[in-house]
Length: 96
Picture 1: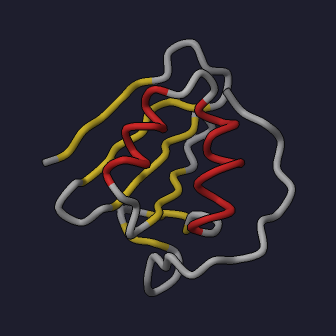
Picture 2: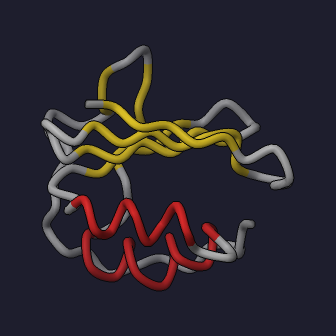
């Protein structure tokens, strides 16, 4: 099952999708970029949806725990695999 939320009040986010069968989160930005994470538990998706600031949640919970998302180009991740290996988070602007 795929769940989707739209971020109409956000200056950066366009929408986010979650595929429960694949445990895959995709975040779509208004600038056209799409980033994806694999192995995201359903409870993390639910917390993300309910969070006051999804940008803050992405930076403070998802990235430290699951690493930076892999960029999606033409429906495919830029690297061969969307990894859940923890990576050292890079500094990014807070988005909401």
